Amino acid sequence: MDPMSLFPAGYVCSRVLGMETEVAIGLHPWERHPERPNRLSVDAEMFVPEGAAGGAIVDYDGVRDLVRSWRGRPHVEVLETLAEELLAECFRDARVAAARVRITKTQIFPEARGAGIEVFRRRKG
Image 1 (cartoon, rainbow, N blue to C red):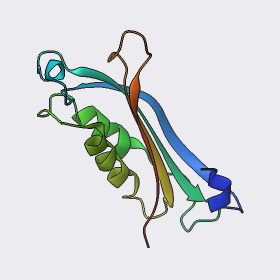
Image 2: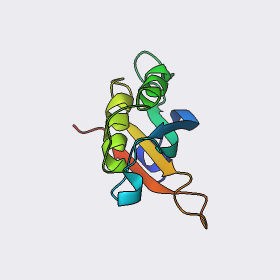
Image 3: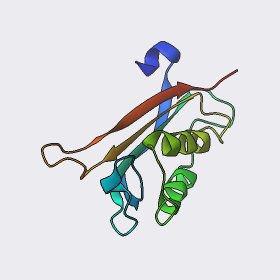
Image 4: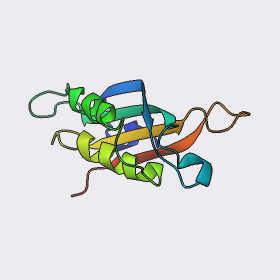
């Protein structure tokens, strides 16, 4: 989706790209070893329409802190669980009208740089 279709007057995108962490995650039996967590790369983008009250600059420290907190947590079945947590953090700032998160398992398959998900969501209501 092109953000300009959502914000024809323009937008500011605050982003944090390539955050890395290790998380015990996955459905496969070989992913269920807490001593061998999956390496994740995490991207988050927060879109604020130009002219938003209070300005369009978003503090992304909360996003960074959340991703850092994932290390050492109990096993998670699917990446979508983490994506939903990250989206909720992105939308904590009321000015954020849309957010995109991307989470990639970077060492899951030897023939690929990674496998993962991307979710783009607009604020409800």
